[in-house]
Amino acid sequence: MDVNNILVVGSGAMGSQIGMVAALAGYQVTVSDISAPMLEKAQAQLRSRMDNSVAKGRLSLEDAAAALGRLRFSTELAKAAASADLAIEAATENLEVKRGIFAALDAAAPPHAILATNSSTFGSSKVADATGRPGQVCNMHFFNPALVMKCVEVVRHEGTSQSTIDTVLAVATRMGKAPVLIEKEIPGFVANRLMGAIRDEALRLYADGIASFEDIDTAAKTALGHPMGPFELMDLVGLDVSHQIRLATFAETGDPADLPHPALTELVERGNYGRKSGKGWYSYDGVQQ
Ligand code: NAD
Image 1 (tube, protein in one colour):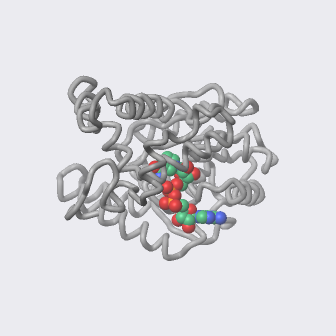
Image 2 (tube, rainbow, N blue to C red):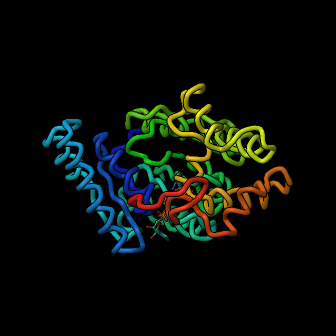
């Protein structure tokens, strides 16, 4: 299927950059949000990012201007959906909010349109039945920051049609991404499960007194070539976020192995959330957040 117009729903950390990625790839894009201030913030941030890319010689002035010219911002979801070939939902991680958006998209978007969710935790089967077109629903899961990270996980639910998958894979490829197809819904999909396994082992090694968390980070960087160690990454993502994700996974699976590690819970209970609170595994005194 030909995709020309893309609608991104949600203009937060993910939606704004997904919109920019799509506009840079030549698509006509509308980024929609219920919050006008969020849209204004997204617009300002994207302009400044493009200015930066031009200043660093990564992008020509003409290409940046053309991409920004293909990007619209709107609080009117139904109007924006009316011309969409593909909608990518990147709104707040709340199932009721997402189901409401999928129902609204289904009512307003043309019959051929594909509706994808960027959710990290909800498989698209959780929103597909809020629409009358479940075969045209899947996950299109970008990584943060979406302008930089190459991976896009395209996840099918049991009823996703092959043509939907083919189209979404082709769009991700045109966006310059390296899409990976995930054949079955599974909590965490693939990349976050791999990261989770490394993080869990790192926490175990630390809690068992095998090595300091600093040395475990050093090993991940110098032996495995990871740009950051698992403890540094937890501090960057936010220990509270990692903690919540584990609780959400446990709520879904009921497997005690999915509960947050006690060492993580202890830090969160002390209010040590990582970089954003100035202290997590490491201290960030004097570091500009
Ligand atoms: P965010 O909180 O930064 O942004 C969410 C945006 O959605 C806000 O601007 C909010 O105003 C908007 N919104 C809320 N309700 C809405 C509605 N009914 N209609 C339109 N807009 C609405 O969140 P985020 O970090 O960008 O995450 C968005 C989605 O992306 C989530 O599903 C999350 O699982 C997924 N995701 C996040 C990351 C990450 O690292 N942050 C990575 C991959 C995927």
